[in-house]
Structures are given as structure tokens and as C-alpha cells.
Length: 112
Length: 113
Image (spheres, rainbow over the protein chains, first blue to last red):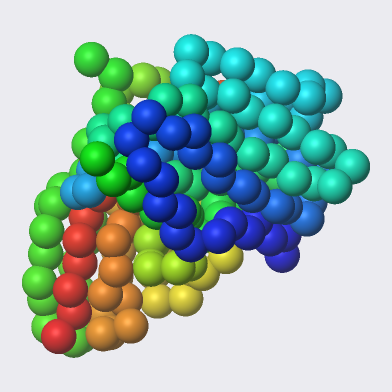
């Protein structure tokens, strides 16, 4: 099946920028997503990007997509302790009925 | 309020004792899915449903059953649970194809002893 891969762990200091990276293998991916999971909670959609876009910005969040390299990144500016969570990259494709394929998740720890 | 509701949130059971985890959504979504979340593996899809009476296997369907008799409900059934089904389970629903947002339930933490 298709793969989505992420690094397991990222630690940053409060106020710094965080960059979480993701690679995927499905060349027919239509949408790529970033979800946030706080402890004991379900997944919350942070943002998504259509595959014909290179970049999307939403307040402190910037998503960059390199379709040629199948690489997606999420940058969080001015990272706060409340940003500590697990971040999941996911992709979906029209020809797969919009079924989501998730990466393993990156645990972001923000140190004061 | 738009939501996906799972019950129970926590469940401890014994090997072989049939159980059902319920999932209900109030958004009239056609698509519903079940995932299990295990450390380092992310979320893996168990089963999905594109509409009433239409279900299909995901990546890890062994040991699970589902049904979709009504649009709003999509229960997950474990006929004979085993310890390797100890996991965190999520139900999700979405409007349809093409980048639509998937709404997730709060999760059900299942322990099989």
C-alpha cells in the first residue's frame, strides 16, 4: 500500500519555529493534511493543501508541498507550550475514495 | 454541534468476549471509517463505508466486523477479541470525496486481557 512517513520526535524551545516533515509515496495524492492530537483527545484537522498548490499559510502555520519530491512540511511560527502534541501527516486521493492514509505521527515537545 | 460520538471511551475486556464499539455522527455524512492507533504506526484503517449498506475492508480488517444499516451509525464489532487488538480506536466521518474534512471521534481505548 501507499506509505506516509514522519520522524517520531521533535523538541523545540518556546518562541522558536518548529518544522515537521513528512514524505509520501502516492503520486496520485489529491489532498495532504496535517492533524493535531492532544493528550487524551481525538484528531483535530489543522490545515490541508491541494496537490496543485506549493504553499498555504494560515496564521502561525505554513504548509509547504514539494510534489516532485513528495515532501510535505508544517512550520509552526512562535511555537508555544500549547502546541505540544502529536502531529499526523495524511494524504488522500480521488481514486481511493478519499480514504486517509496516515503517517506514524511526530511528537512535538515545546520546552519553556 | 457537529460531532462524531464514540462509546465507550474506555473498555477493559477478556479474550473472546464479544464487544461492540458504537459510533454515531450528526452531520449526515456519507463516509465513515474506523481506525486503530498504535505507537509509532499512526492510524491504520480497519474498515470504511461509503454509504448505507456499503462497507469495505481497510488495511487491517482481520478480527473486526462493521455494519452500516443507517447513515448516522457505524458500529465496530469484535466477535472474539484478542490481546493484539488492545489499541486506541477512532471513528471518523466526512462528506465525501476530494479533500473534505474528516471529523474524528474522541477515541475508545480498548484493553483485552
